[in-house]
Length: 273
Image (cartoon, rainbow, N blue to C red; front, side):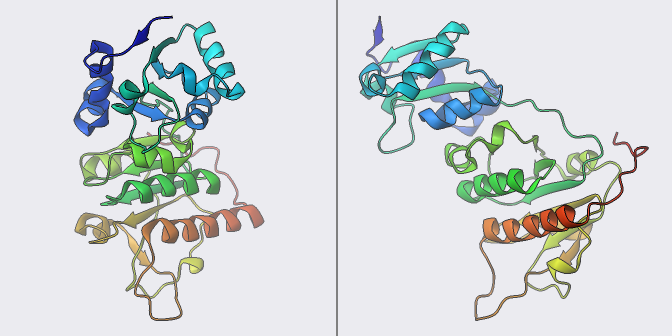
């Protein structure tokens, strides 16, 4: 088995461009690091384009060797490399010995979505990934990254999402017009703010609805506020606000609770253009 020993190898240099947002957008690919995440992607039906791996790090791990054998059988190019080469592709301090070049997931946008999450100016990748993970767990139909939000395929976002990227329809929108085009017919839209009077559990989440979660530093944009009805999470103590990922999870699981306990009637004639 040939082993890549140079960081100047053309395949490695091309993959390394995916560490930057511009490179990911240009190639419609991203890097996925770690045995568990690569396995989750494969089990979700997404096939890697290329695998870079360190043989000695994976030789004693049955899960890893089984995964590599399966991918090779499927025709995925698996390239052995040295730890130094892999380190130029990995973002973690201690790489697990495997990095995959993945295509952007292409799950179709849901028709007549019942619950849509919109991230507005959410710039922290860990919060974005955690929101995706919570969204999938709470039964969200699709997630929209509105203008000025973090790249959902940022390494930290992908790791925090724990596989949600492969199971949840995602769209990145450069304008609010593009956001609204995905919300057709436009449902009631709510936005979480600290100043609102209406509590999040006073909303009927059983209807078709969209929820906007604003960014950590500046909150929601003026465009988002103009589209949505404000709601808040009542709090005791002296904290002024909650972390965006925590606030989003609280509201999304209230929606899940309502839907689980009293599911609404479904209009079979409703369609989404």
